[in-house]
Image (tube, rainbow, N blue to C red; front, top):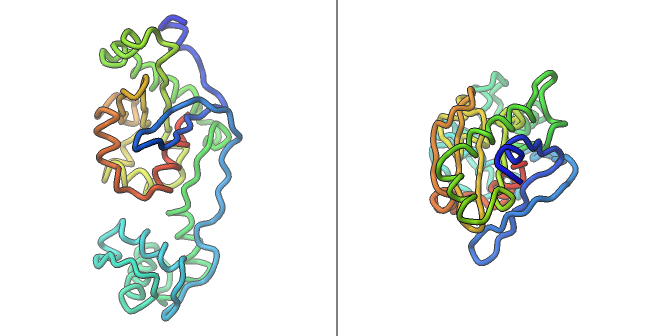
Length: 237
């Protein structure tokens, strides 16, 4: 396969699957159905409660220091969590009761339940596959990715996976990787061959705004929640 054929290939219904082996990620193509996601918060939460969903609530709140500056994750719904819930409710126009009922749970699920998938998640009328493919073409034109193709024996050995930010419902997910830049991000693209590669952030016009090696990216994100990172890698297609 030559570079032109490679760049014009539209990957539909395929994502990149990552398996952790000895601290390294092994990438391979796999055709799967669009990911299905269950709500993150399924029960009401209140002062005095101690369970895994309170623990999850505290973990999610640690992403926003204006809501939960203490960032304590104990699983216990105490005074600090109560204040955090009220701040969250005030921020999103919900009556400040401190009780996590249906309205607050709905907002929490909207913000923190990460929903990914392929073309079925596109906004109506948004040509997401075409947009992602354009982003992949720009990455394949970079000198470093062309060097990968030459080093590893051709473009068939170079794997490029893209995450179109418009397919991600909740920018809180992307803000963890690129703080304060989620709204200006159009694609995140990983290009790799063997265990070498590069990670690119493209802006809304799909211009390359930032790049780092795959090793640098993995080092930078090594302490992130494993479930969070697994969903990120599995969303690449």
